[in-house]
Each structure stands twice: as structure tokens, then as C-alpha cells.
Length: 482
Image 1 (cartoon, one colour):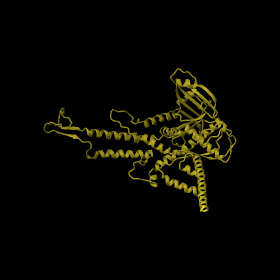
Image 2 (tube, helix red, strand yellow):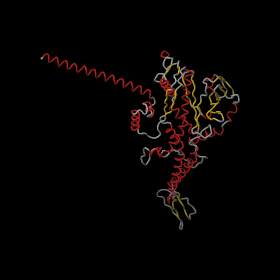
Image 3 (tube, rainbow, N blue to C red):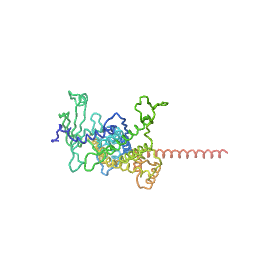
Image 4 (cartoon, rainbow, N blue to C red):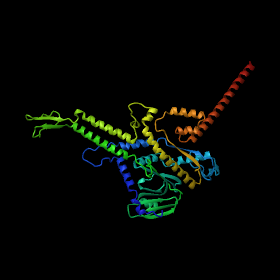
């Protein structure tokens, strides 16, 4: 941090930032290199491919927390099963069982994710990462509302420094963003003459600095003990910190598809409004192409309509467009079957083979995301331990992804039932595999229902037994009377 020069920050990573803008513009539909008065159609297939793959990627994202063997002291508020902190009167300091700690850690994480609407935030961040090539999460403590905040800073204002031999060891992060005059006055009590100014946060493990343009307005020790950013690539580029966008491989076929379709559109338009060709005619003032028109031509002249579609020429254009279209599917790794509407039904292994390229791309992205979401959850637990005095960090966690391909839920449930009954794995594992968000809560509900059913059965048996004895006694009395 001693060598940091805020005035030189805007000169860093110019190629990366210009690439961000180029990819974002292309995704938004700016796909012609030059504007023209001629028709320039844009069939934004690259946008649809990015959105489609991201939808497959984020399907069924869940988390599972497992206990460690070491009990940990927890002198703070205990998390209720619903995920809300218990009131101070219900605090129970002391040892927490490993299983209880895992339950509380999971409830806390889901509570924080729900408070920050992370289902929508994660999808938007993944779209952004697929377009730009990089994504980021920021996990901080809100001292006013006493809760954990998760945001997704714009990577256009993000700068990182790491050790040369280890890309995972980030020792300094700068985050720059623009605020208006009123926002700066409200948040930082600073009056500025300009309409806007840049705020730059500089983080290391030990220190935090806040710059207003080029001036330091706040300096203090890092209150968290870690850099609260999770920076990740869309796809990992070997030996590089910053990632690869999904857009560049699609740019050339997308441009060619737009050009070919625009050309075909112009041909069809001209064919619908045919051109009159005159041979041996010096003047054509009275020649008009309209229904019922009569042309008076001199001798030894000839007139006809130009047919641009004769000889099957239109078929060549269509075949070329289909070829470019197939190229886009290949380069996006999203086969036509991923968009539905297949000419023949596929299931099981056949569908998996058809979508193999999509599965491989999604799996490559999920390899990166596993560490991203684990690290974000670790930050949540660390902030909770620091500011709420309840240490739930001694847990093991697992990121659970939903299936990419359509699943036969009935068949899958039958398989899990057999595995549970045979003792291969537990009910919790079965619920994890079936995509149940909170297995512990579902198990508790099942236990509660089972207990109530047993109680009702016992009460019914008791009532039935009492009713039978009364009937027998009545019959005996009748016999005595007789």
C-alpha cells in the first residue's frame, strides 16, 4: 500500500477495460462495424446463447453444511431453525454440538442470502461475468442495520494485485465507483463543487483507505481481517488472473449471420418490387411496374422483369445461412437441442450425447464457481463471528448444483429410496441429491409428522379398545337381565 499511487489507477488495465466495453456493446446489439443507409439487421443470437448457458449454469444452486468433529465455544446468540437470530433472552452460551453448529451455519447463510436477494443477484452477476469475462462479490457488515450485505461491484472499476507465483493470493484490491454530489454529501458529509466524483476503496488484509478523487478522506485498520472481495473469472485462462468472456468466439459468425440475413432480406424485398429491364429503349419515362400497366415499346425492343430468384439462387443463400447458424451453435457450445423444439424426441443417454458440449461448458464454469460460493459463505460466517460473537466457522460446506439435463424425478426418487433403505447413504444425502434446500428442516418436519401420526394411532387404538369393552359390557348386562 505504501507504493500505491491513486493518480495512476486510471492508466492500469486499459486493454482489459476496453475489452469489457467491446463485449458489452456487442451483447447489447452493436454488431455492425460501420453504419450504413442500407438495411442492417441484427439477430442477436450471441445474447440468447449467453443467457441460455447461464440459465443452465445456475439451475438448482444450493449449499450443504456438514459438522466437524471438534466442538466450538459459542457465547453469542443462537440461530433459530427458521434462520432468524434468537432474542437475547434465549441466548445459550456454551458448547454447541457439531451437528447443531452445521444446522445453524446453514440457516445463517440462507438467511443472509435471502436478505440480499441473492437468487436474482447471482444470476445477474453470472450474466455480467459471461459478457465481460470476470465477476465479483463484496461481503461487508452494515453497522446501521446490524446485518451482512452482499453486493456485486462493477468489475470495470475493480483492480487487483496478487503475488507473481500464486494467482489465488490477492494482497490488495482497489474498487472505484462514481457518486453524485448529493450522495457524497449524504454518505460522507463532504461538499464538492463538481456534480460527480470518484470514490476509491483500497483494501489490504491490514488496512483500509478511502479516496475522494485523489484525496484520502478515511484511513483505518481493516475491520474484517480479510479483503471482502471475491473476484473470479468467467472461464479460467491458463496462467492469467482475469478471465475469458463468452462473447469473442461468437463475434465473427454473429456478424456474418447479420450480413447474410440482411442481404437475403434485400433480395426478397427487390423481388417483391421487381425491376423492369428494357433492351433497345432510349427513354423510359412512361414505363412503370404496376398491376394492369400497359407498355408501348418501339419495334426491335424488349422489356421484362428482373427475377433475382430464378435458377434456385435463393437456395444458396439459405444454405449458407444455415451453415453460419450451425457454426454459432458449435462455437457457443449450445447445441440446437438446448433451445428445445427438436425434430425428434431424445431422452437418457441420447440426450446427454446431444448436449455433451453444453454439459462440458457448464461443468467448466462450475469448477470455478465452487470456490467462489464457498469463499463467499466463509466470509458470511467470519463476519457473523466477529460482529455477533457467535463462531459458526468450524463447519465443512459443499456447493450442490442442480442437474443440467431434464430429470425423471420419479425414477430418481426411487433410486434414492433404495439407497437409503439399503444403508448406502442417509436421508439427508438423498434430500441433497434431490435438490431439497434445507434437508435438516425437512427431516424435522418429517419427524414431527411421524410423531403426530403415532400419537393419533395410539389414541385411535385406545378409543377403539374402550368402545369394544363398552359393547361387551352392555351385552353381558343384557344377558343378566334376561
